[in-house]
Image 1 (cartoon, helix red, strand yellow):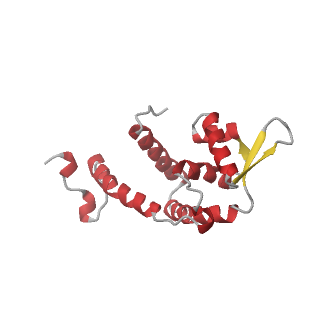
Image 2 (image 1 turned 60 degrees about the vertical axis):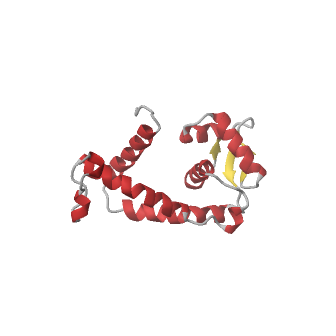
Image 3 (image 1 turned 120 degrees about the vertical axis):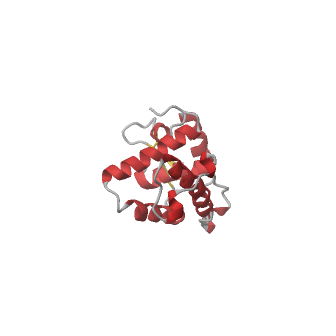
Length: 164
C-alpha cells in the first residue's frame, strides 16, 4: 500500500497521527475548503467588477490595515509596486478604490477603499473572517503563529519557493 493510499488516523476519529496521516487529511480537506470559500457570494454591488483573487488580497489589506501607499501594499502582497499600481489603477477606474495625496508628502499617493464600496467589501470578507476567528480563537498565540507559518510554508513549497 502506498503512502497516499494508506489508512489515516482520521478514519478512527483520533485525528492525524503521523506526517503521512496529516498529509492525507489535508489533501482531502483543502479541496472542500476551497469549494466552500468559492461559494461565498460576491455582493451584488461588486458582481459587475469581475474581481479576482488578487483583488481580494489587496482589498483585505486595505480593509483590515487601512489606507496605505502602493509601496506598502506591494510589500504586504510580496509583489512589485508596478503590479500593485496596475491593480490599483484597475480598481480606481471601477470606483472601488480612491487615491489621494499624502499630506506629509504630496508626491506620494495613499490608496483606500472608496467609502461607498466599503460596506459591500466588508460583507464579502466577513464570512471568511468570522470562520477564521472561530477556528483560531481556541488556540494560543504560539499555536496561531505556528498554524499561519505552516500555511505560509505550504504555499511556498507548492510555489517552489524557498522558505526564508
